Length: 215
Ligand SMILES: NC(=O)c1ccc[n+]([C@@H]2O[C@H](COP(=O)([O-])OP(=O)(O)OC[C@H]3O[C@@H](n4cnc5c(N)ncnc54)[C@H](O)[C@@H]3O)[C@@H](O)[C@H]2O)c1
Image 1 (spheres, rainbow, N blue to C red):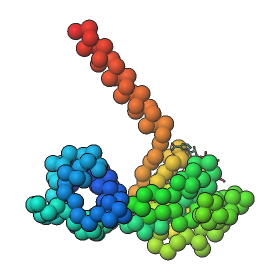
Image 2: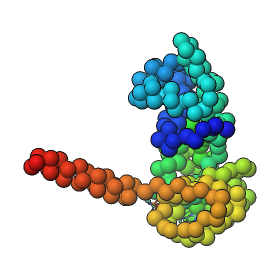
Image 3: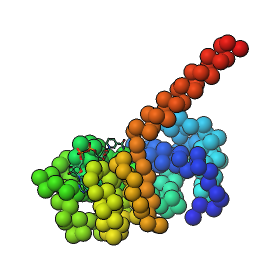
Image 4: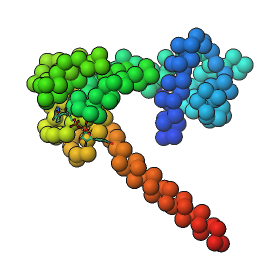
């Protein structure tokens, strides 16, 4: 386990490192210096070394980091699993866009199958099997913990059903408020609130710049 308390900013950078390391491995790189990794991820090498130090004594001076070992440590320590079987619920416009993407750069696994309440959506889309919602309990892959929610109706009822099936992590694209029991993590993805935050940020930067001009 990660020994020291890892700062939030560091935790947020870990997936970037992991993604880069996976790519490097794919290209045949077996070891890497923090300076080289720095140009790859566009993060200062000192920051990289500090970030990695939370995971133990990983690198050797003059040798750098063993790519395989780093990937292994990220997997074990951070619980990241490339074979994570993710389900998607709601194969509409947004759901299908995600199914079409379904690459996730080999970082977090892939969408194993999808479900939709509309039986007409059943079938194979973008190589992913879509099942009618009535088959959720039968067809949910064994050991599946993560569900992407891109539905528009009966959100609470659906969440309750997913939780009963063993889902403990929900990526929520719906704009609906719902309750999840303790032990179930929900990550909201909302383009609208991101835009709102940006509008607020850009406005305050503009007024700050104007104020500085007049001073
Ligand atoms: N978070 C964001 O930034 C963002 C952006 C766009 C849309 N959305 C939201 O995402 C959701 C989907 O949007 P869309 O444009 O793809 O809609 P859509 O109508 O095209 O697709 C919704 C799909 O979900 C299915 N569905 C609805 N309720 C279901 C349920 N309880 N169980 C199983 N299947 C169900 C429908 O049959 C349909 O196929 C909506 O709630 C929308 O508000 C969020």
